[in-house]
Length: 168
Image 1 (tube, rainbow, N blue to C red):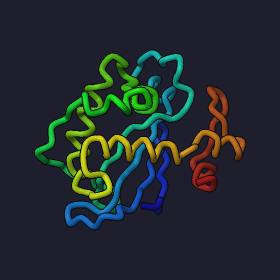
Image 2 (image 1 turned 180 degrees about the vertical axis):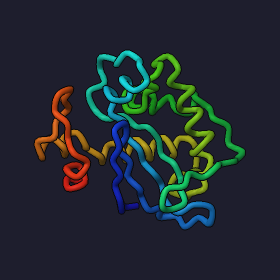
Image 3 (image 1 turned 135 degrees about the vertical axis):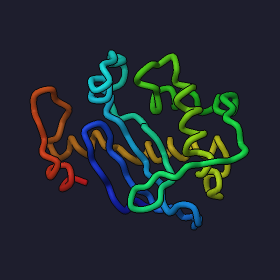
Image 4 (image 1 turned 90 degrees about the vertical axis):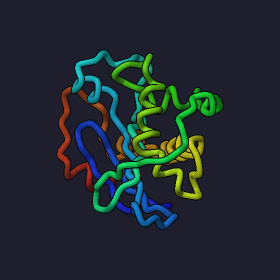
């Protein structure tokens, strides 16, 4: 898989990743990161203290250019399968609206998007779906990339969309 395009918005940054697996139902993954301060401000929720970097918003199979796919499948979400990934998921894929409901967010994301993704032999199952998302997050050091171009989080400084596009 390789990144072919990057989109930017106020709440999230998304990257379209061409799927190595050729599926007749969808062509790529949309991997989306969220900036917690903006997300929390937009939803009028308190920003959790320890979130100082982008967090995962989702990994969604799409039909290019950007149409999400309705997924159906037989695999049921099973939180016990994620125990080995749990420490990283809690930090890198939290429910910013309500940290006590993070498991519900993971269940929603898997049932809405992961059931398609598990058709990809590179993902295979629920653990593969979440592990792939964590691997993509590890490869995406967006905050430091932006800092190298003097783009830093601020409540005062505004950045033009063009600046982000040039960096990406």
